[in-house]
Length: 162
Image 1 (tube, helix red, strand yellow):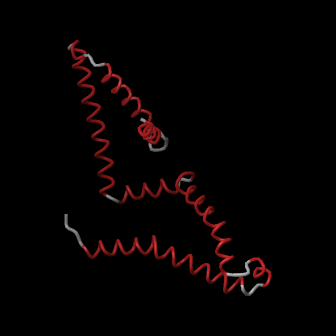
Image 2 (cartoon, rainbow, N blue to C red):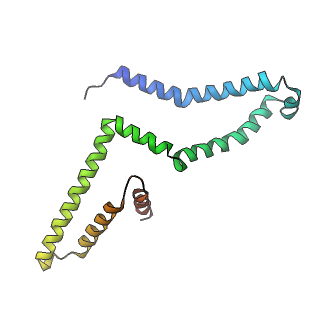
Image 3 (tube, rainbow, N blue to C red):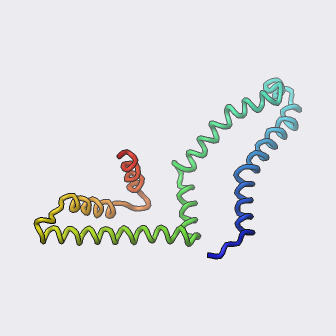
C-alpha cells in the first residue's frame, strides 16, 4: 500500500487543529469577546458578572453540562450520528470491506455449524447438543437483526455481561 506522508501529515494536522486547537481558541475567543464587548458595556450584566472570572465560572457551570447533554443527544437519541456513520461506510472502501467480510464470515460459520450438526446427526457419537443450540441461536439472531433495530447492541451488551 503506497503511503503519502504529506497527506498523512495534513490529515493529522487537520484533526489536531479541529479537535483541539480550534476548540480551545473558539471557546476562549467567545468568552473574551462576549465579556469585553457585551457584558462590560451593559451595566446590568456587569452587576451579574462583576469580573471575567465570574463570567467564565457561570458559563462553565451551565455550559459544560448543557454541551454534554447535547453531545449525548447527538449520539444516542437522534439519527444524526447513525447517518454520519452510514456516510462513512458508503464513502470509505476500507470500512465497507470490513463490513462485507464480517457478513461473509458469519455466513461461512453458520454453514460450517450446519455441516457439523448434520455430521452429528449421522453419527450418534458426534451428537453435540451445544452445537445445535448455537446454530439455532445464530440463525434466530440473524433473522431478527436489522440495521434499524438494536439487536446487535443487545448482543454486544450480553457479551460484556458474560
